[in-house]
Length: 135
Length: 135
Length: 135
Length: 135
Image 1 (cartoon, each protein chain N blue to C red):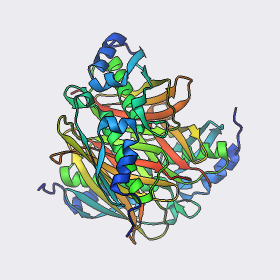
Image 2: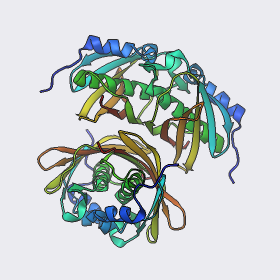
Image 3: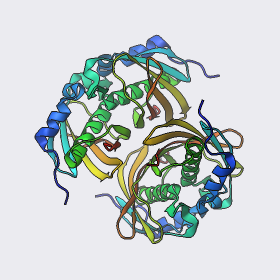
Image 4: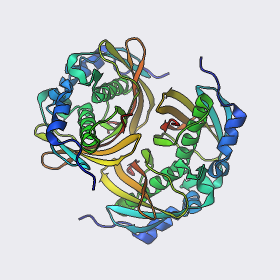
Protein backbone atom coordinates (compact mmCIF):
# COMPACT_ATOMS: atom_id res chain seq x y z
CA UNK A 1 0.00 0.00 0.00
CA UNK A 2 2.76 2.41 1.03
CA UNK A 3 5.41 3.49 -1.45
CA UNK A 4 9.19 3.36 -1.31
CA UNK A 5 10.45 6.86 -0.43
CA UNK A 6 14.19 6.11 -0.54
CA UNK A 7 15.65 3.43 -2.79
CA UNK A 8 18.34 0.83 -2.09
CA UNK A 9 21.19 2.85 -3.55
CA UNK A 10 20.34 5.99 -1.59
CA UNK A 11 19.91 4.00 1.63
CA UNK A 12 23.32 2.42 1.17
CA UNK A 13 24.81 5.87 0.64
CA UNK A 14 23.24 7.01 3.92
CA UNK A 15 24.46 3.94 5.79
CA UNK A 16 27.96 4.39 4.37
CA UNK A 17 28.00 8.02 5.50
CA UNK A 18 28.64 6.55 8.96
CA UNK A 19 32.31 5.66 9.48
CA UNK A 20 31.29 2.96 11.94
CA UNK A 21 28.82 1.35 9.54
CA UNK A 22 31.61 1.30 6.94
CA UNK A 23 33.95 -0.32 9.45
CA UNK A 24 31.27 -2.94 10.18
CA UNK A 25 30.82 -3.59 6.46
CA UNK A 26 27.03 -3.22 6.82
CA UNK A 27 25.06 -2.83 3.60
CA UNK A 28 21.41 -3.13 2.59
CA UNK A 29 20.53 -5.89 0.13
CA UNK A 30 16.78 -5.42 -0.24
CA UNK A 31 14.39 -2.69 0.89
CA UNK A 32 10.67 -2.10 0.79
CA UNK A 33 8.59 0.41 2.80
CA UNK A 34 7.89 -2.41 5.28
CA UNK A 35 11.20 -4.27 5.41
CA UNK A 36 14.95 -3.80 5.01
CA UNK A 37 17.42 -6.66 4.77
CA UNK A 38 21.06 -5.93 5.53
CA UNK A 39 24.17 -8.09 5.46
CA UNK A 40 27.34 -7.80 7.53
CA UNK A 41 30.40 -10.01 7.09
CA UNK A 42 31.96 -11.54 10.15
CA UNK A 43 35.52 -10.44 10.88
CA UNK A 44 38.04 -11.22 13.60
CA UNK A 45 37.75 -7.76 15.24
CA UNK A 46 34.10 -8.44 16.11
CA UNK A 47 34.96 -11.11 18.65
CA UNK A 48 33.83 -10.56 22.23
CA UNK A 49 35.95 -13.35 23.70
CA UNK A 50 35.54 -17.14 23.86
CA UNK A 51 34.83 -17.51 20.14
CA UNK A 52 31.68 -15.38 20.37
CA UNK A 53 30.68 -12.24 18.54
CA UNK A 54 30.55 -9.21 20.88
CA UNK A 55 26.95 -8.64 22.00
CA UNK A 56 27.24 -4.96 21.20
CA UNK A 57 27.90 -5.79 17.54
CA UNK A 58 24.41 -7.24 17.22
CA UNK A 59 23.03 -4.05 18.79
CA UNK A 60 24.92 -1.98 16.21
CA UNK A 61 23.53 -4.02 13.34
CA UNK A 62 19.99 -3.87 14.75
CA UNK A 63 20.15 -0.09 15.12
CA UNK A 64 21.41 0.33 11.54
CA UNK A 65 18.80 -2.01 10.04
CA UNK A 66 15.98 -0.21 11.84
CA UNK A 67 17.28 3.10 10.48
CA UNK A 68 17.34 1.62 6.94
CA UNK A 69 13.68 0.58 6.91
CA UNK A 70 12.60 3.96 8.31
CA UNK A 71 14.52 5.65 5.49
CA UNK A 72 12.80 3.37 2.98
CA UNK A 73 9.36 4.28 4.33
CA UNK A 74 9.87 7.90 5.32
CA UNK A 75 13.02 9.18 3.61
CA UNK A 76 14.37 10.59 6.86
CA UNK A 77 14.56 9.81 10.57
CA UNK A 78 15.30 11.44 13.89
CA UNK A 79 17.65 9.75 16.39
CA UNK A 80 17.11 6.44 18.22
CA UNK A 81 15.10 6.94 21.42
CA UNK A 82 15.63 3.46 22.85
CA UNK A 83 16.32 -0.12 21.88
CA UNK A 84 16.00 -3.63 23.26
CA UNK A 85 18.15 -6.56 22.20
CA UNK A 86 17.62 -10.23 23.05
CA UNK A 87 20.53 -12.58 22.47
CA UNK A 88 19.44 -16.05 21.36
CA UNK A 89 22.53 -17.83 20.10
CA UNK A 90 26.03 -16.95 19.11
CA UNK A 91 28.09 -17.51 16.02
CA UNK A 92 31.35 -16.52 14.48
CA UNK A 93 32.44 -16.65 10.88
CA UNK A 94 30.11 -16.28 7.94
CA UNK A 95 27.80 -13.36 7.20
CA UNK A 96 25.06 -12.03 9.43
CA UNK A 97 21.70 -11.29 7.79
CA UNK A 98 19.69 -8.57 9.53
CA UNK A 99 15.98 -8.10 8.77
CA UNK A 100 14.10 -5.03 10.00
CA UNK A 101 10.29 -4.85 9.87
CA UNK A 102 8.60 -1.51 10.35
CA UNK A 103 5.92 -2.15 12.93
CA UNK A 104 4.50 1.34 13.03
CA UNK A 105 5.53 4.79 11.83
CA UNK A 106 3.57 7.66 13.32
CA UNK A 107 4.02 11.41 13.44
CA UNK A 108 6.24 11.26 16.51
CA UNK A 109 7.97 7.87 16.59
CA UNK A 110 8.70 4.82 14.45
CA UNK A 111 8.85 1.33 15.95
CA UNK A 112 10.88 -1.41 14.26
CA UNK A 113 11.33 -5.15 14.91
CA UNK A 114 14.69 -6.60 13.90
CA UNK A 115 16.13 -10.11 13.67
CA UNK A 116 19.76 -11.11 13.19
CA UNK A 117 20.35 -14.50 11.61
CA UNK A 118 23.38 -16.46 10.55
CA UNK A 119 23.81 -17.01 6.81
CA UNK A 120 22.34 -20.49 7.44
CA UNK A 121 19.16 -18.95 8.90
CA UNK A 122 19.77 -19.50 12.62
CA UNK A 123 18.24 -16.81 14.85
CA UNK A 124 21.09 -15.15 16.74
CA UNK A 125 19.55 -12.00 18.16
CA UNK A 126 16.37 -9.96 17.93
CA UNK A 127 15.58 -6.44 18.88
CA UNK A 128 13.20 -3.55 18.89
CA UNK A 129 14.11 0.06 18.16
CA UNK A 130 12.10 3.21 18.71
CA UNK A 131 13.24 6.15 16.59
CA UNK A 132 12.06 9.74 16.91
CA UNK A 133 10.46 11.22 13.81
CA UNK A 134 12.00 14.31 12.25
CA UNK A 135 10.17 17.40 13.41
CA UNK B 1 29.43 -6.04 52.65
CA UNK B 2 30.33 -8.20 49.66
CA UNK B 3 33.95 -8.74 48.68
CA UNK B 4 35.81 -8.12 45.44
CA UNK B 5 36.23 -11.46 43.65
CA UNK B 6 38.19 -10.21 40.64
CA UNK B 7 40.49 -7.19 40.82
CA UNK B 8 40.95 -4.31 38.38
CA UNK B 9 43.96 -5.80 36.63
CA UNK B 10 42.31 -9.18 36.05
CA UNK B 11 39.10 -7.52 34.81
CA UNK B 12 41.10 -5.45 32.33
CA UNK B 13 42.78 -8.61 31.11
CA UNK B 14 39.37 -10.21 30.56
CA UNK B 15 38.03 -7.15 28.76
CA UNK B 16 41.14 -6.99 26.57
CA UNK B 17 40.71 -10.67 25.65
CA UNK B 18 37.95 -9.39 23.35
CA UNK B 19 39.33 -8.06 20.06
CA UNK B 20 36.36 -5.72 19.78
CA UNK B 21 36.84 -4.27 23.27
CA UNK B 22 40.49 -3.66 22.33
CA UNK B 23 39.39 -1.93 19.13
CA UNK B 24 37.01 0.25 21.19
CA UNK B 25 39.81 1.09 23.64
CA UNK B 26 37.56 0.20 26.59
CA UNK B 27 39.26 -0.21 29.95
CA UNK B 28 38.14 -0.33 33.57
CA UNK B 29 39.35 2.46 35.85
CA UNK B 30 37.73 1.51 39.15
CA UNK B 31 35.92 -1.59 40.32
CA UNK B 32 34.09 -2.68 43.46
CA UNK B 33 31.65 -5.59 43.94
CA UNK B 34 28.81 -3.08 43.37
CA UNK B 35 30.20 -0.80 40.67
CA UNK B 36 32.59 -0.74 37.73
CA UNK B 37 33.71 2.44 36.00
CA UNK B 38 35.10 2.17 32.48
CA UNK B 39 36.51 4.73 30.07
CA UNK B 40 36.49 4.72 26.29
CA UNK B 41 38.18 7.35 24.13
CA UNK B 42 36.22 8.83 21.27
CA UNK B 43 37.66 8.18 17.80
CA UNK B 44 36.61 9.09 14.28
CA UNK B 45 35.56 5.53 13.39
CA UNK B 46 32.79 5.62 16.04
CA UNK B 47 30.77 8.18 14.14
CA UNK B 48 27.26 7.22 13.10
CA UNK B 49 26.82 10.17 10.74
CA UNK B 50 25.91 13.84 11.27
CA UNK B 51 28.57 14.40 13.94
CA UNK B 52 27.01 11.82 16.28
CA UNK B 53 28.45 8.71 17.86
CA UNK B 54 26.82 5.54 16.48
CA UNK B 55 24.07 4.41 18.85
CA UNK B 56 25.40 0.87 18.75
CA UNK B 57 28.68 2.06 20.24
CA UNK B 58 26.92 3.03 23.45
CA UNK B 59 25.30 -0.42 23.51
CA UNK B 60 28.75 -2.02 23.18
CA UNK B 61 30.14 0.03 26.05
CA UNK B 62 27.11 -0.70 28.23
CA UNK B 63 27.39 -4.44 27.62
CA UNK B 64 31.12 -4.42 28.48
CA UNK B 65 30.68 -2.35 31.64
CA UNK B 66 27.91 -4.65 32.90
CA UNK B 67 30.21 -7.63 32.30
CA UNK B 68 32.99 -5.92 34.28
CA UNK B 69 30.94 -5.38 37.44
CA UNK B 70 29.66 -8.98 37.33
CA UNK B 71 33.28 -10.18 37.12
CA UNK B 72 34.14 -7.97 40.09
CA UNK B 73 31.31 -9.43 42.18
CA UNK B 74 31.25 -13.02 40.93
CA UNK B 75 34.52 -13.71 39.13
CA UNK B 76 32.71 -15.16 36.12
CA UNK B 77 29.59 -14.65 34.02
CA UNK B 78 27.43 -16.40 31.48
CA UNK B 79 26.34 -14.59 28.29
CA UNK B 80 24.08 -11.55 27.99
CA UNK B 81 20.38 -12.53 27.90
CA UNK B 82 19.00 -9.14 26.93
CA UNK B 83 19.67 -5.45 27.16
CA UNK B 84 17.87 -2.11 26.93
CA UNK B 85 19.50 1.13 25.95
CA UNK B 86 18.00 4.64 26.19
CA UNK B 87 19.71 7.40 24.25
CA UNK B 88 19.59 10.75 26.03
CA UNK B 89 22.06 13.02 24.25
CA UNK B 90 24.86 12.69 21.80
CA UNK B 91 28.46 13.75 21.79
CA UNK B 92 31.61 13.34 19.83
CA UNK B 93 35.19 13.88 20.87
CA UNK B 94 36.49 13.44 24.38
CA UNK B 95 36.27 10.30 26.49
CA UNK B 96 33.12 8.44 27.48
CA UNK B 97 32.82 7.38 31.13
CA UNK B 98 30.67 4.28 31.68
CA UNK B 99 29.40 3.38 35.16
CA UNK B 100 27.81 -0.01 35.82
CA UNK B 101 25.90 -0.68 39.06
CA UNK B 102 25.09 -4.26 39.97
CA UNK B 103 21.39 -4.18 40.88
CA UNK B 104 21.05 -7.85 41.74
CA UNK B 105 23.07 -11.02 41.27
CA UNK B 106 21.18 -14.24 41.87
CA UNK B 107 21.85 -17.88 41.15
CA UNK B 108 20.44 -17.64 37.64
CA UNK B 109 20.82 -14.08 36.42
CA UNK B 110 22.56 -10.82 37.19
CA UNK B 111 20.91 -7.45 36.51
CA UNK B 112 23.02 -4.34 35.93
CA UNK B 113 22.20 -0.63 35.49
CA UNK B 114 24.63 1.32 33.34
CA UNK B 115 25.10 5.01 32.51
CA UNK B 116 27.29 6.52 29.81
CA UNK B 117 28.46 10.07 30.41
CA UNK B 118 30.69 12.50 28.62
CA UNK B 119 33.97 13.39 30.32
CA UNK B 120 32.18 16.57 31.48
CA UNK B 121 29.49 14.50 33.21
CA UNK B 122 26.63 14.86 30.73
CA UNK B 123 24.32 11.82 30.61
CA UNK B 124 24.46 10.45 27.07
CA UNK B 125 22.88 6.99 27.37
CA UNK B 126 21.67 4.58 30.00
CA UNK B 127 20.95 0.92 29.88
CA UNK B 128 20.07 -2.26 31.65
CA UNK B 129 21.67 -5.64 31.01
CA UNK B 130 20.56 -9.08 32.16
CA UNK B 131 23.35 -11.66 32.13
CA UNK B 132 22.95 -15.39 32.67
CA UNK B 133 24.90 -16.84 35.60
CA UNK B 134 27.44 -19.58 34.92
CA UNK B 135 25.86 -22.94 35.59
CA UNK C 1 7.29 -30.13 14.45
CA UNK C 2 6.87 -29.67 18.19
CA UNK C 3 3.88 -31.14 20.02
CA UNK C 4 1.29 -29.57 22.27
CA UNK C 5 2.23 -30.39 25.88
CA UNK C 6 -0.71 -28.68 27.60
CA UNK C 7 -4.11 -28.33 25.95
CA UNK C 8 -6.50 -25.38 25.83
CA UNK C 9 -8.64 -26.52 28.74
CA UNK C 10 -5.69 -27.12 31.05
CA UNK C 11 -4.13 -23.77 30.10
CA UNK C 12 -7.37 -21.99 30.91
CA UNK C 13 -7.47 -23.74 34.26
CA UNK C 14 -3.94 -22.51 34.98
CA UNK C 15 -4.76 -18.96 33.90
CA UNK C 16 -7.91 -18.98 36.03
CA UNK C 17 -5.89 -20.13 39.05
CA UNK C 18 -4.75 -16.50 39.22
CA UNK C 19 -7.31 -14.27 40.94
CA UNK C 20 -6.09 -11.31 38.93
CA UNK C 21 -6.44 -13.12 35.58
CA UNK C 22 -10.00 -13.99 36.64
CA UNK C 23 -10.67 -10.37 37.51
CA UNK C 24 -9.34 -9.36 34.07
CA UNK C 25 -11.55 -11.96 32.39
CA UNK C 26 -8.56 -13.28 30.40
CA UNK C 27 -9.03 -16.62 28.67
CA UNK C 28 -7.23 -18.57 25.94
CA UNK C 29 -9.15 -19.19 22.72
CA UNK C 30 -6.59 -21.12 20.67
CA UNK C 31 -3.24 -22.66 21.52
CA UNK C 32 -0.47 -24.43 19.64
CA UNK C 33 3.14 -25.09 20.72
CA UNK C 34 4.10 -21.91 18.81
CA UNK C 35 1.19 -19.57 19.48
CA UNK C 36 -1.49 -18.77 22.05
CA UNK C 37 -4.41 -16.44 21.38
CA UNK C 38 -6.21 -14.95 24.37
CA UNK C 39 -9.21 -12.66 24.66
CA UNK C 40 -10.03 -10.10 27.34
CA UNK C 41 -13.24 -8.08 27.48
CA UNK C 42 -13.01 -4.36 28.06
CA UNK C 43 -14.63 -3.11 31.27
CA UNK C 44 -14.99 0.26 32.91
CA UNK C 45 -12.51 -0.52 35.71
CA UNK C 46 -9.68 -0.84 33.16
CA UNK C 47 -9.70 2.83 32.34
CA UNK C 48 -6.53 4.80 32.95
CA UNK C 49 -8.15 8.21 32.53
CA UNK C 50 -9.16 10.29 29.50
CA UNK C 51 -11.08 7.46 27.83
CA UNK C 52 -7.96 5.27 27.56
CA UNK C 53 -7.23 1.81 28.83
CA UNK C 54 -4.56 1.84 31.59
CA UNK C 55 -1.15 1.03 30.07
CA UNK C 56 -0.48 -1.49 32.80
CA UNK C 57 -3.50 -3.52 31.68
CA UNK C 58 -1.81 -4.26 28.37
CA UNK C 59 1.29 -5.34 30.28
CA UNK C 60 -0.85 -7.73 32.36
CA UNK C 61 -2.41 -9.25 29.25
CA UNK C 62 0.99 -9.58 27.53
CA UNK C 63 2.49 -11.34 30.55
CA UNK C 64 -0.43 -13.79 30.75
CA UNK C 65 -0.41 -14.58 27.02
CA UNK C 66 3.33 -15.27 27.07
CA UNK C 67 2.79 -17.64 30.00
CA UNK C 68 0.04 -19.46 28.07
CA UNK C 69 2.18 -20.24 25.02
CA UNK C 70 5.04 -21.46 27.22
CA UNK C 71 2.59 -23.81 28.98
CA UNK C 72 1.41 -25.05 25.58
CA UNK C 73 4.97 -25.83 24.48
CA UNK C 74 6.55 -26.89 27.76
CA UNK C 75 3.78 -27.71 30.23
CA UNK C 76 5.36 -25.54 32.91
CA UNK C 77 7.23 -22.28 33.37
CA UNK C 78 9.36 -20.44 35.88
CA UNK C 79 8.64 -16.76 36.68
CA UNK C 80 8.93 -13.76 34.34
CA UNK C 81 12.49 -12.36 34.25
CA UNK C 82 11.71 -9.18 32.35
CA UNK C 83 9.33 -7.68 29.85
CA UNK C 84 9.10 -4.81 27.38
CA UNK C 85 5.87 -3.21 26.25
CA UNK C 86 5.40 -0.72 23.40
CA UNK C 87 2.15 1.22 23.28
CA UNK C 88 0.95 1.91 19.75
CA UNK C 89 -2.65 3.08 20.03
CA UNK C 90 -5.37 3.13 22.60
CA UNK C 91 -8.91 1.90 22.68
CA UNK C 92 -11.75 1.41 25.05
CA UNK C 93 -14.78 -0.82 24.73
CA UNK C 94 -14.83 -4.08 22.83
CA UNK C 95 -12.62 -7.09 23.39
CA UNK C 96 -8.84 -7.17 23.25
CA UNK C 97 -7.24 -10.05 21.33
CA UNK C 98 -3.77 -11.01 22.54
CA UNK C 99 -1.48 -13.20 20.40
CA UNK C 100 1.71 -14.67 21.86
CA UNK C 101 4.36 -16.25 19.60
CA UNK C 102 7.06 -18.38 21.18
CA UNK C 103 10.29 -17.09 19.68
CA UNK C 104 12.63 -19.46 21.46
CA UNK C 105 12.43 -21.89 24.37
CA UNK C 106 15.78 -23.07 25.70
CA UNK C 107 16.91 -24.90 28.80
CA UNK C 108 17.20 -21.70 30.80
CA UNK C 109 14.80 -19.15 29.37
CA UNK C 110 11.86 -18.78 27.01
CA UNK C 111 11.38 -15.67 24.86
CA UNK C 112 7.92 -14.67 23.64
CA UNK C 113 6.63 -11.95 21.28
CA UNK C 114 3.13 -10.67 22.02
CA UNK C 115 0.69 -8.36 20.24
CA UNK C 116 -2.50 -6.83 21.62
CA UNK C 117 -5.13 -5.92 19.06
CA UNK C 118 -8.62 -4.51 19.18
CA UNK C 119 -11.41 -6.84 18.10
CA UNK C 120 -11.28 -5.00 14.75
CA UNK C 121 -7.62 -5.90 14.33
CA UNK C 122 -5.96 -2.60 15.22
CA UNK C 123 -2.53 -2.99 16.82
CA UNK C 124 -2.73 -1.44 20.30
CA UNK C 125 0.40 -2.70 22.05
CA UNK C 126 3.21 -5.17 21.55
CA UNK C 127 5.65 -6.70 23.93
CA UNK C 128 8.37 -9.17 24.61
CA UNK C 129 8.61 -11.38 27.70
CA UNK C 130 11.53 -13.45 28.95
CA UNK C 131 10.50 -16.24 31.33
CA UNK C 132 12.84 -18.42 33.36
CA UNK C 133 12.60 -22.14 32.71
CA UNK C 134 11.72 -24.44 35.59
CA UNK C 135 14.86 -25.95 37.03
CA UNK D 1 16.93 23.45 41.13
CA UNK D 2 13.66 22.73 39.34
CA UNK D 3 10.34 23.62 40.94
CA UNK D 4 7.29 21.52 41.75
CA UNK D 5 4.67 22.20 39.07
CA UNK D 6 1.91 19.97 40.45
CA UNK D 7 1.55 19.28 44.18
CA UNK D 8 0.79 16.04 46.00
CA UNK D 9 -2.95 16.65 46.32
CA UNK D 10 -3.39 17.48 42.63
CA UNK D 11 -1.30 14.46 41.58
CA UNK D 12 -3.44 12.18 43.73
CA UNK D 13 -6.55 13.66 42.12
CA UNK D 14 -5.11 12.88 38.69
CA UNK D 15 -4.15 9.33 39.71
CA UNK D 16 -7.60 8.76 41.18
CA UNK D 17 -9.22 9.95 37.96
CA UNK D 18 -8.25 6.50 36.63
CA UNK D 19 -10.75 3.82 37.66
CA UNK D 20 -7.99 1.21 37.51
CA UNK D 21 -5.64 3.21 39.74
CA UNK D 22 -8.53 3.51 42.23
CA UNK D 23 -9.09 -0.23 42.05
CA UNK D 24 -5.38 -0.79 42.73
CA UNK D 25 -5.50 1.60 45.68
CA UNK D 26 -2.45 3.47 44.36
CA UNK D 27 -1.71 6.84 45.93
CA UNK D 28 1.25 9.20 46.05
CA UNK D 29 2.85 9.82 49.45
CA UNK D 30 5.64 12.22 48.56
CA UNK D 31 6.50 14.14 45.42
CA UNK D 32 9.29 16.42 44.26
CA UNK D 33 10.21 17.48 40.70
CA UNK D 34 12.76 14.64 40.69
CA UNK D 35 10.97 11.86 42.57
CA UNK D 36 7.52 10.49 43.36
CA UNK D 37 6.86 7.86 45.99
CA UNK D 38 3.61 5.89 45.78
CA UNK D 39 2.10 3.20 47.95
CA UNK D 40 -0.22 0.35 46.99
CA UNK D 41 -1.76 -2.08 49.47
CA UNK D 42 -1.60 -5.77 48.65
CA UNK D 43 -4.98 -7.47 48.19
CA UNK D 44 -6.06 -10.98 47.33
CA UNK D 45 -7.21 -10.07 43.80
CA UNK D 46 -3.62 -9.17 42.84
CA UNK D 47 -2.45 -12.75 43.02
CA UNK D 48 -0.99 -14.30 39.88
CA UNK D 49 -1.03 -17.84 41.22
CA UNK D 50 1.27 -19.80 43.56
CA UNK D 51 1.25 -17.13 46.29
CA UNK D 52 2.82 -14.56 43.97
CA UNK D 53 1.67 -11.11 42.93
CA UNK D 54 0.79 -10.98 39.21
CA UNK D 55 3.74 -9.60 37.24
CA UNK D 56 1.45 -7.23 35.40
CA UNK D 57 0.52 -5.56 38.69
CA UNK D 58 4.09 -4.35 39.12
CA UNK D 59 3.97 -3.00 35.57
CA UNK D 60 0.77 -1.08 36.42
CA UNK D 61 2.33 0.43 39.53
CA UNK D 62 5.52 1.36 37.64
CA UNK D 63 3.56 3.07 34.88
CA UNK D 64 1.50 5.07 37.40
CA UNK D 65 4.52 6.13 39.46
CA UNK D 66 6.36 7.32 36.35
CA UNK D 67 3.30 9.37 35.39
CA UNK D 68 3.21 10.92 38.89
CA UNK D 69 6.78 12.23 38.80
CA UNK D 70 6.28 13.67 35.30
CA UNK D 71 3.19 15.51 36.57
CA UNK D 72 5.23 16.83 39.51
CA UNK D 73 7.93 18.16 37.19
CA UNK D 74 5.89 19.19 34.16
CA UNK D 75 2.25 19.42 35.22
CA UNK D 76 1.14 17.31 32.25
CA UNK D 77 2.19 14.32 30.22
CA UNK D 78 1.48 12.58 26.93
CA UNK D 79 0.94 8.80 26.82
CA UNK D 80 3.46 6.07 27.62
CA UNK D 81 5.61 5.19 24.58
CA UNK D 82 7.23 2.08 26.02
CA UNK D 83 8.27 0.45 29.26
CA UNK D 84 10.61 -2.22 30.57
CA UNK D 85 10.07 -4.17 33.77
CA UNK D 86 12.55 -6.47 35.52
CA UNK D 87 11.20 -8.83 38.16
CA UNK D 88 13.61 -9.40 41.03
CA UNK D 89 11.65 -11.07 43.81
CA UNK D 90 8.07 -11.70 44.68
CA UNK D 91 5.94 -10.97 47.68
CA UNK D 92 2.38 -11.05 48.82
CA UNK D 93 0.74 -9.23 51.70
CA UNK D 94 1.85 -5.90 53.03
CA UNK D 95 2.13 -2.66 51.08
CA UNK D 96 4.24 -2.04 48.00
CA UNK D 97 6.30 1.16 47.92
CA UNK D 98 7.00 2.49 44.43
CA UNK D 99 9.68 5.13 43.84
CA UNK D 100 9.96 6.90 40.48
CA UNK D 101 13.02 9.01 39.61
CA UNK D 102 12.83 11.37 36.66
CA UNK D 103 15.98 10.65 34.68
CA UNK D 104 15.41 13.18 31.93
CA UNK D 105 12.53 15.33 30.70
CA UNK D 106 13.05 16.86 27.28
CA UNK D 107 10.80 18.59 24.78
CA UNK D 108 9.70 15.32 23.21
CA UNK D 109 9.99 12.56 25.81
CA UNK D 110 10.46 11.98 29.52
CA UNK D 111 12.43 9.01 30.86
CA UNK D 112 11.75 7.63 34.33
CA UNK D 113 13.42 4.94 36.48
CA UNK D 114 11.13 3.14 38.91
CA UNK D 115 11.65 0.67 41.75
CA UNK D 116 9.02 -1.39 43.55
CA UNK D 117 9.89 -2.47 47.08
CA UNK D 118 8.12 -4.34 49.82
CA UNK D 119 7.23 -2.34 52.93
CA UNK D 120 10.35 -3.90 54.49
CA UNK D 121 12.54 -2.45 51.72
CA UNK D 122 13.12 -5.56 49.61
CA UNK D 123 13.55 -4.81 45.89
CA UNK D 124 10.75 -6.64 44.06
CA UNK D 125 10.77 -5.10 40.58
CA UNK D 126 12.33 -2.24 38.69
CA UNK D 127 11.42 -0.57 35.48
CA UNK D 128 11.92 2.19 33.01
CA UNK D 129 9.19 4.17 31.30
CA UNK D 130 9.39 6.52 28.34
CA UNK D 131 6.47 8.96 28.12
CA UNK D 132 5.71 11.28 25.22
CA UNK D 133 5.62 14.97 26.06
CA UNK D 134 2.43 16.91 25.42
CA UNK D 135 2.66 18.73 22.12
